[in-house]
Image 1 (cartoon, rainbow, N blue to C red):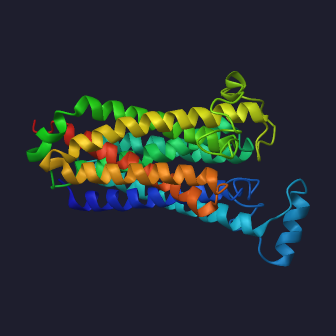
Image 2: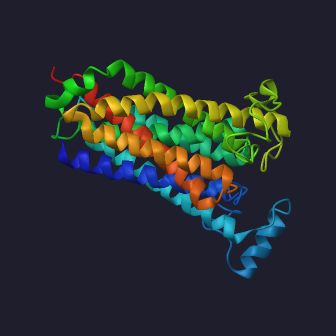
Image 3: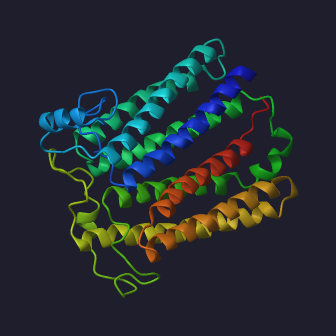
Length: 326
């Protein structure tokens, strides 16, 4: 056990969560292209703020005039992401002497550099949906691995209570897999600007099963060079994406809800079951409010944040169900 590594990994996980939430804020406030270049912003390390800087930036990038309110959001997100890269480098230095977590830390380093590349491609490929979704999933994977690293390097082990979790191990794994798919669907919905394709609930366009183009809605790779800000799909394609996300939400709610109830009936796992149940209800409520309230920014960002917390909870359940006594 390495208490310094544990604390650093835990701090990095908290920072990764902040980066995920801020990334959602940037994306949902349409600031994803607030800086049309990378890693700087209009050719400088900070965003253009002074009148002279703005004029110079507008001359250099006439196709995308400076919007300072969007540029600073994007750059703050990049600064925090850069700090996270430095933390992961420090974690690798500390983990090098520990064979138990060395491989995990090394994989985390590779992942975060790939995540940085996805951040660059998000800008240079002008919000290509598959890249935007990949960037979201990469951030969540980084967050998850940092949590696992923090738990693995901690002296506080739940082996004594593991039996309460191991009997539900298969259900936990299935639930985790379903949740990851649902998060990916949520990322695809956001990347294709499909959150308001159905402005009503529980119906969509006034129908329980509206006309939708599923084949076009789930084309993953599209033309390079197109500006995807605002989305390019027609309504039927966006409806297909939105409805798939709704169906996934129902499946996830039922599966994780049953798991939460079963855990609450086991005294050693009662607190975890309660947390899972509360987060699940909050997440579904936020999703419904996104539709009924026409995607208010704070509500939509919270939906992303609670999704990350749900993932962390399911990952903790999987960690607790794993036999680490050997």
